[in-house]
Length: 284
Image 1 (cartoon, rainbow, N blue to C red):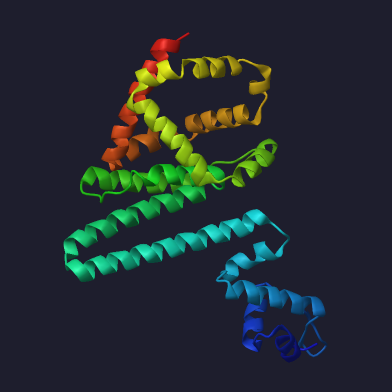
Image 2: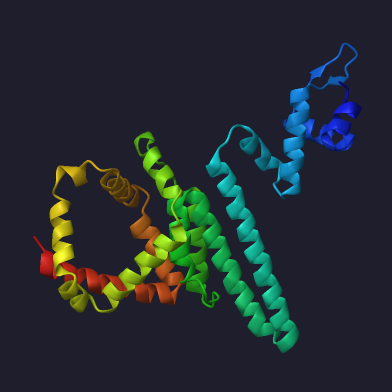
């Protein structure tokens, strides 16, 4: 069939079909006279493309969604859309605040802080795809609530952006299934549970060690077993340790974050104090 019939059957326009062909979403055969010839399968693809476009999916993201039933690919698009919705809501809230207060300087500082936070969070989720990126984004966003006010902070921010734009983090094939399982989990719920437990531990490490002595010692013993050492969790831990060493995560990224965020620096100081208390009690 020719393009006019394909447009009618798929309930789209000739211009849209030509655009999709130009972008490589469709590759119809050509007649002897050079006209595009569409099949029934092409029409079904056009219907899917039209549906995805009506759901706000960008043309550049459509090929990945058409090539199979990849739930992770759909989830990625959903998360991007949710992020955009949240951003528009925040912009609307800032506009309402400005209209009510007419305090241009105060609102400007808040917007600058939010833009800094969004820039770092976007880079984190791109550098660390899947569960790990989402977890890191949830972790660091709480420490990026204040605007950049010093030259040192500005330098640290640029260093962080450059680091995340160039960092290499790859998951080996043997951990693909394990990471896929993590990606299906509720990352926000896991983070909140972990964060709450960690907050209690670092706020009063001595009491925490006393109250959780049995659990800690059971876990330390478990780490010595073959079951743990051969587990995917242990392999992921070693992968992250290797990444930290090779990609200067702890020696470059973390110090830069401490310079950028006074709140994060305070958090790290508490974490170091808790780590010291742990080592004093369980040093080999």
